[in-house]
Image (cartoon, rainbow, N blue to C red; front, top):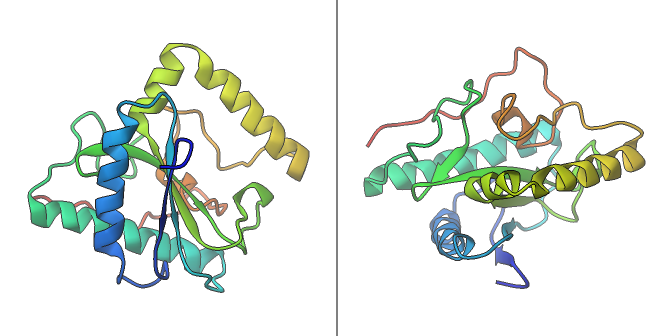
Length: 189
């Protein structure tokens, strides 16, 4: 944990070699996130020259693998959220905790989603609920959107308000159309 940013260095995002370490790190982060007012986990991967579609496929491969660790361990999907990426109530569940995930990589078309190497940022769904309840969420949202507009000239068309719109299409940062199909498939224990 570094000043409320939990960081894990992992292997390549398009390889499964670090899935167990990532899963353990996200569980440890979730334990800390319950006590922290605002924190995030950053999973930093080795540099890989992936285009947006390749990055998106690797992101969903990693998330599918983390979900399958839950399934093998008998850990149920968090009941406060949907496991169906087509639902507006969807968020990703790992270790029984709900998360909003932000992907970033060097070849992202949106500047705000560019990072020196592939990365996945995990934000506690419950944290967003707390921020929304005390009124700080909307100030944070305005600041993020103002920064995006200053960088790009417009707000990322994939962004939706927390709790509104579909969450899954936002994870990779790639602009997708209404016909986009999420590759994630929830499994039961």
